[in-house]
Length: 260
Image 1: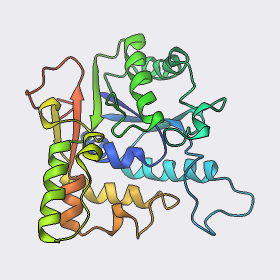
Image 2: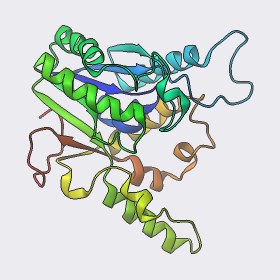
Image 3: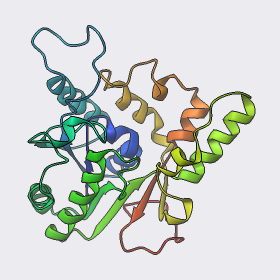
């Protein structure tokens, strides 16, 4: 049995980026541990969602626990930092935000879990945090340092295949003339080029679990959201593969599993 620790910035990131890998690992008999840096306090709140006296942070913790159960996580931990908001927000610099946390301090918190679990594999994010969110960039910095401190042997940076996304957007535009297309500048801010990706995991057998985990986060992912409203075929294209860059692996050598 291998222990996989998967590290994320906010509640719901886990199901979007690594949900298939988590469920696959659990079904294959491995131990899955989910670590979340913040409780997602800066998320938008749908009207009437929260109960009287309930905070968004409290709700998102419960949602994370529900999603983790769907995905097969045996343990869930929060590092205790607050959501930093989008890049450039005033919240970036507030005391206690993840973005302002000393990397060494936060990395030691994560490293303690890695040591306790004798983890063989850690997932974090690529160096741009997937799309430039400050907390996601910090997940990369903290995750990489924590793996060094704990001596975790295999580290995978979760990312998006930018070229795959571009092909999908082009096909959509061709099938729906006049539909908006992201600019090249916008595309360049998302994920990594295909040639930098080392690990491509087909998670289509676990897509229903990814969708169920997304539905466990109704405070952020409604039935009308981009994630849940798309047709099955489009959902399969967008979320049926999970991409990673294995630290220390030469680009161009693509494997199909984290746990082999």
